[in-house]
Each structure stands twice: as structure tokens, then as C-alpha cells.
Image (tube, rainbow, N blue to C red):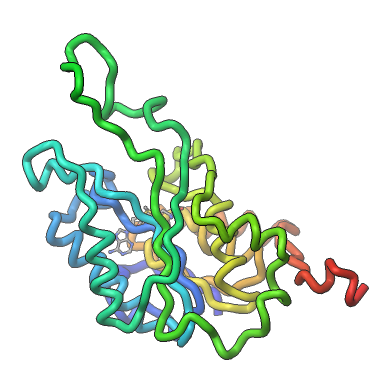
Length: 268
Ligand SMILES: C[S@@+](CC[C@H](N)C(=O)[O-])C[C@H]1O[C@@H](n2cnc3c(N)ncnc32)[C@H](O)[C@@H]1O
């Protein structure tokens, strides 16, 4: 059932049914090569059509996790220095039309941004009080389809240990961003995806990423014994996804993921 499609995620025909969990990071409209053909209107339309397709493919009680940061290049649209927070608000309005509702807001706290940013500087040509902050965080918005509770799964205690639950139920996660972006310009960290996979799906579930990039979501889904479905329009990245999947599929890296009741010696 696991599959990667080379194609456009705006096309509803590229989607599977019965998706239990989507974990994705769309383009941010921040001048990356892979989004250079989108105007701001195209960009909003892209997000609206892709997430409508995702909502329609999601099963009752399924979850949709969207990792996004506020747009860095909005000054290109408004002509002035201006922070823009509208996309996250648009997402919530759109999802409500498709019977999907916000369950959780997670803040992913990253490294200090001034270390490698060209957008802020400290020198004697900058007037005092003109200080821009760079976002050292991103969001993960988690929506549920129709109902937050799935009827086809057992209790949380069968799947998630109390230790993990305690660590991850707090809504600020500190995770270093990916350092080696030499094969793809904007990968999210495996640890971010792993937590979402373990919190919001069970083994055997189908996990989707409609902006698949280098394949982080399928790789983590595979390692944790979930099925995966990825959509990516760039042929080079499509090959990269297969290369990254081959690496884990040909290794013994697939985690056993014992349910907590094994750990509590109820079985062994
Ligand atoms: C932010 S990156 C995702 C990176 C991914 N999370 C990872 O860890 O590698 C967004 C990806 O969406 C892809 N993309 C952009 N527009 C698309 C479309 N209409 N259909 C499918 N993929 C698209 C880009 O080529 C890019 O690889």
C-alpha cells in the first residue's frame, strides 16, 4: 500500500483514501527555488487546494499536522517591512469548511537564527530601535477530521508510554533544525516527525505527505511500522525520496516500537 507519486498535489486524483495522519511542511513563500513559479495568489490557492484534498482523504478522527512558519518574504507582496501571520488564520478558516478542527498548536523551538541569517545584522549603519527579530520557532498546527476520537483504535496506554506522553504533551518542543541541507533546501528533522507519528497514529496506519521533499515523513513512518504515501512534483526530489527509503528499507533500522504494556512486564 505504501507509495510515492511523482505529481502535483493540487490534483485530487493523486491521493489515496483512508489517510490516518498527514505530516507535512508546505512551501513558505520565502524565495526557495522549488516555489519560484508561485505568485502570492497562486501560493494561497496551492495551500487551499492541497489541504482540501488532504481533508477529503482523511478518515474520521484522522489527524493533519502542518509545520509552517510565518512568511519571511511578505515584504515582496506589501512593499514594506512587515511580518505576516495571515496564512495560519486562513488555514483554520478553510479547514472548518471541510469539517476539520484545530486540536493542538505546537511551537517548535529551533536554534538561534542570527548565527546564519542574512536578514538581520548588527553594525553602525542600523539606526537604534530598528531591530527585527527573526523567528526562532515554527508552528505545527494539528487538525482532526470530524471527531478527535477514533473508533477503530484501542486506548492510548496500549500505544504510548506515560514517559513519552509527559514529554510531548507540553506544547513547546526544542529540536535542532537540520544542518545538512545539501540534498534538499528545507528538510524538517526526523525527531519532529517521529513525535507526531507516535502521538497521532498507530502501527499499520497510512501516513501522508503531499509536499514530500526528501521523504522525511515516509522514512519515519516506515521506521515506525506505518504505511506511507508521498506526493512530490520535482523529479530530482522524487529520486531522492527513493534513495532515502532504500537506505532504511535495506537496513534493520525499522524500530520494534514495543507497546507500553510490554514494557510494564504484563506480557514478558
Ligand atoms: C518545504 S519542502 C518539504 C520538505 C520535506 N518536509 C523534507 O523534510 O524533506 C516542500 C516541497 O514541496 C514540493 N512542492 C511544491 N509544490 C508542489 C506541488 N504543487 N505538488 C507537489 N509537491 C510540491 C517542493 O518541490 C518541495 O520539495
